Amino acid sequence: MSRPLPPVEDIRALVGHRFPGGHYTIAHWENFLLTECTGSEPLPGDIAHPVALFHVPILGAGTSIGEMFALGQADSDASIGIESYDWEFFQPLREEHPYRIDAEITEADRREENGRMFDRIAFRFDLEDADGKPAARTTITWHYNRGKR
Image (cartoon, rainbow, N blue to C red; front, side, top):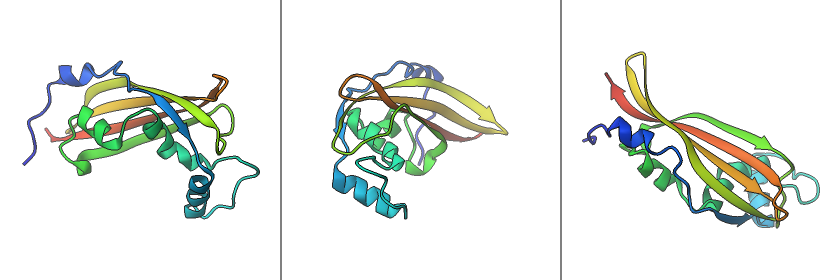
């Protein structure tokens, strides 16, 4: 049984929500396994595979997929739809280099398209290197499906 539709005001109030933030270091073994599972060859030197941006920002910002689902009041794991993962690299990510990660919800609103209702929520994660220089940014936009209307 699905839960009642969350009030749109509760969803809109998520804009500006900040996650605790923190640090993350991509270990060599982690980069090796990530690279291997993509079928790619290792990148030169200590450069980390870009696929690390799927999990590094979330873990480093002190949150989890589960918390992100809960903030948007997802009915179930199956009620989430992916709109986009937008990755910006300002420098290559590197193994064994600590990154400071800060994150917040930048957009949250209710939409209706073709009779389908959903809440669209965007999470932005900013990664800085040890010198405080921007390293990468990822914006994850999900749809919290609310059913047909």
